[in-house]
Amino acid sequence: MDASTLAALLKEAEEHHGAYEAVAPTHHWWDWYAPYIVARADGRTVDEAVADAGLHMEVVLR
Image (cartoon, rainbow, N blue to C red; front, side, top):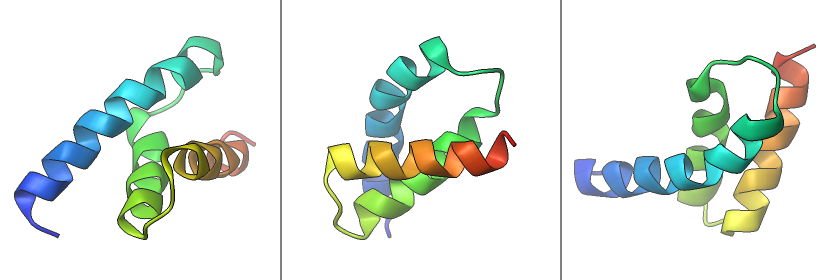
């Protein structure tokens, strides 16, 4: 992945993380961003990536 692609995915992740952050317990942003970006890089849709990140956070926050 090149820097431009990663930058675009980071920006996109930031836009979608806000809705999660507003209702989530305290967490590190990178724990949500990482699975979101991996999902998008793997060709999953935005909605699928948001869901993947949410599922990942359920594990992280246990």
